[in-house]
Image 1 (cartoon, rainbow, N blue to C red):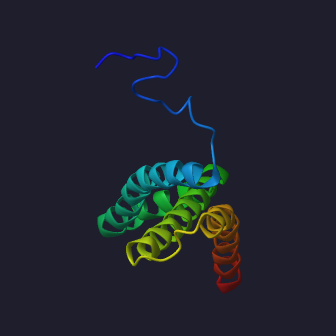
Image 2: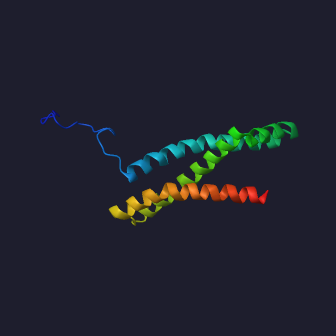
Image 3: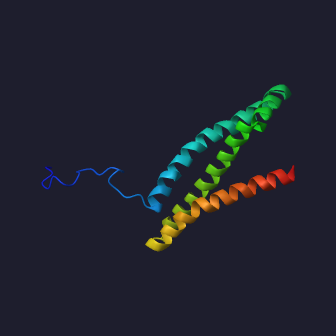
Amino acid sequence: MANVTRSRPLSPHLQVYKPIPTMVMSIVHRITGAALYFGTVLVAWWLIAAASGEAYFGWVNWFFGTLIGRLVLFGYTWALMHHMLGGLRHFMWDMGHGYEKNFSTKLAIITPVVSVALTVLIWVVGYLAR
């Protein structure tokens, strides 16, 4: 098929579109999904260490207790919360609700705020429970 107008691309790319909140949240949802694969490997590593013996488990716990380890765990917690909220948004859409432009845009803007708040809440409760 020939591009008759020569002013429009035949296959638009992301650079053609103006980023809108729902588009950005869709991309972040995919990124957090990929990050959860890495985080699941960390959970498996921790469980394998627990089954491997006290010395190795202590070393893995030490690593997760370092600043880098805690930042990784904090990021994993945020990715989990953000992906969960995105999944709930998609579930709502699957049920046929929330397609209105204003509502879906507000929901896309609120999602990162709520995911950060939930992450901080989880970490505060975790530290208080220690």
